[in-house]
Image (cartoon, rainbow over all chains, first blue to last red; front, side, top):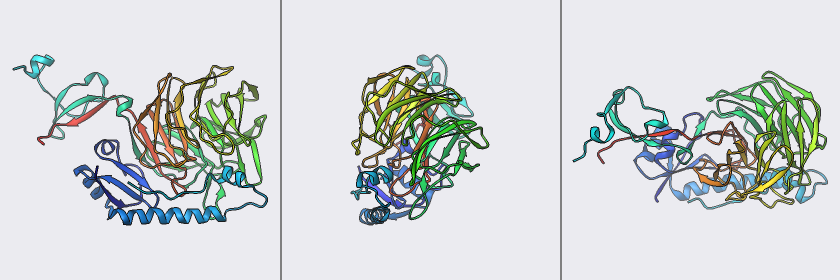
Length: 101
Length: 328
């Protein structure tokens, strides 16, 4: 399956509808990156939301950048006397970078 | 050649709006408002999808929620910063947008909530200085502190209503303690067979479901257990083991969604016997709020999707799906 990539902040209600979810693949990622099924319905949705189209590598760089920022925040969020297990219980595991489809 | 009238017993109908009843499945009709021929496909849980709902006013993770899809409540969690702060903000949802209401008396993260938008409980949780057994009752306007849990904890699962609630699991350390609330007092009941935290729950005080979660230090679980008012019994596992997930519904019709690790979009439907994968959330996240009256009408709010999230998604399994007839 082919995909397109765009960036747009989710404005809330009706940003994507049930009908649209039935018509094309849609994934949201950090940095307001959206992976959109490459068909007419996906194109119409990108137009509806006025999404800024990106290449896959551009989209990947945005996602990775946001996660790396979150990793830095996680590293620097410490409580005196807290063990590593306690930190994971409090914050969840450290955010990990990944490859988008 | 067979004709439509010969097969269905009537000619193609002209309708001003799309039908919504399940007994219209198979119908071909002309929508006079849209000027299009359409047909009706069967709906059900396999046709369910997640659509975006109104954004929370306060982005957060480790929040909790309760209620129904068109009348929900979300409170607590961790957001802001860095460094992030535990939250006392409470918001109510009307099916379209969230409105800030009166705050929790005690800011906390990893609390659990049960009940309805106008009759809820906010139970347990933690802030950086301590864990909590704190229990606050919400009447649709304000929170009032009522009797604490017998055992202070966070990241529990819950089910039931304000006057007949159930809280189970949580930690630290991860445990299976279960307590029943009668509207005034907490009483200990049978423990979960698999003690765990950051799990999800659904159902009533006498017919509950507990699913997913984590052991210490953090191994994700697929274990599902059902409660009969006295004891927990293990039943069929989730297809995808996960922790920090959310869920809603009743013991025989529930939905499990999101969680990690890593953040997942997976959604599974429980029919009383087994879990089946259904449509995925658009955005994977963990430590979110989630609730629903059934496994067909649910809501996911907040959580962590790489950063604190204010996003809401609404799961709806329609009775029918309307498709437009095209010439391509």
